[in-house]
Image 1: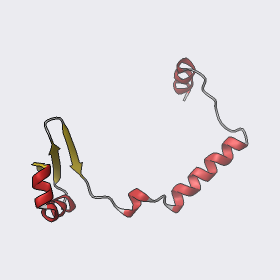
Image 2: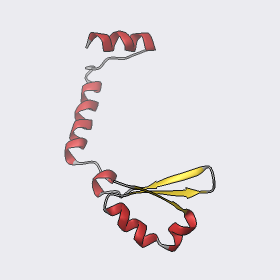
Image 3: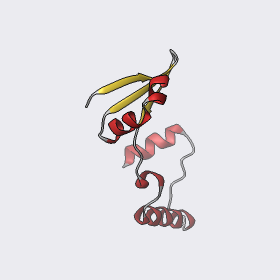
Length: 86
């Protein structure tokens, strides 16, 4: 996979071409001025919405918390102890 760096002006002039490249998996970096840059990345519907499985897992986790089946971590030291115990 190649990396293509372009200016914001070039991007404005040839948007379709750069969108097509990103869709094919190419990394397109758009430079704006001398200190800012952005990566053009395709987004799928899965990136924008929760799947039914993810919603179910969140609901189950919230139910566990309501039932008191969770661990409250009050400090970094307590977190370290908890993680060490796993």
